Length: 58
Image (cartoon, rainbow, N blue to C red; front, side):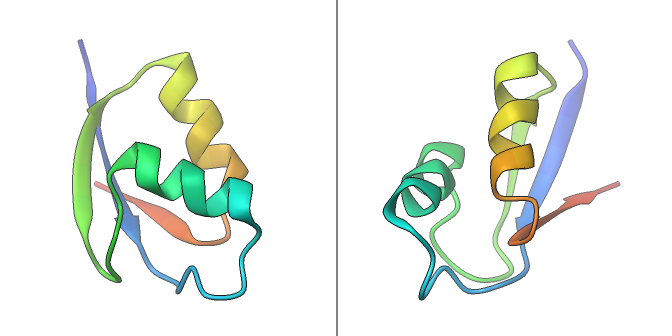
């Protein structure tokens, strides 16, 4: 299965609770932290929800 790397580029401060929970579910707890996940529809949906806070690293 393909892998996707996600990096948190903006702070979670001031974000709604559901977006903070989504970042936690992705494993992102600090700024500039990079995590690797399988490229599934579920992960893509989570990334879409917090797309203004994260970027996809190649």
